[in-house]
Image (tube, rainbow, N blue to C red; front, side, top):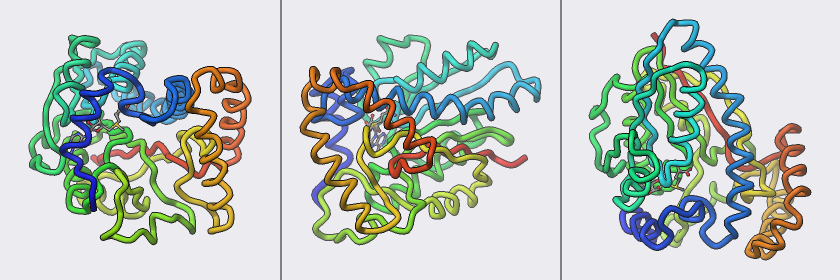
Length: 286
Ligand SMILES: C[S@@+](CC[C@H](N)C(=O)[O-])C[C@H]1O[C@@H](n2cnc3c(N)ncnc32)[C@H](O)[C@@H]1O
């Protein structure tokens, strides 16, 4: 394996400081990255609603919130604002391996506590039972070594308080076919590996969490496919993403056709044909 997680991310944040590209698709236009985040934000809203309603019903007013692998702080800010608009007092923290990422968050969101940690090395019990809400968006699949991936999920799960919530947005596999199921361990050079949903459920069950909801976050049209009903459909979607990638490199071309892609993305998500990332909500059982 050529990819070194501990070098890759600090270097990328240094090079593309504060840009969505630093946390989305670094070789595609900022416009494409914005469309992808908009699609994901719409999916998050539906899932977060379920947790917010129960938090409200419990009479809780103060929420300790931790965003893991926070990057530019896009989701830290969006989730904090969503909770504040529901009347909660939010004490937000953002964790990342990159000092540059944390500097950007500190400038944009001075009220957020920055935490520099490596998820591969952090003790899973470091923040045991500390947060009513923990989120981790597009971070854990970048931990390509299995032991790092498991450590990160154990850390996230055990940081959730009893009765609290964990939101994870990532490519997780739920369909019969993915090329990631058959990649060659020794030759693999990618910076991410999607894992199966049952595997994530299993790790989180060990630390007391149970899946509450799952929803398509974005479709293969705006983010590429990670899975398919079979190898034929996988091949077609991968080739389509390759062709779209050429167009998505240009800001102007992406802007010109953006309406078409947004509408297609919505339809694919609604009909459960998105074949890309998902947003999952877990709860720590009381
Ligand atoms: C694809 S970005 C996603 C950022 C943000 N959550 C978002 O969706 O916009 C992945 C983030 O995880 C962080 N990250 C990667 N490996 C990490 C590790 N081992 N420990 C802590 N953070 C890590 C990176 O620095 C980066 O900010």
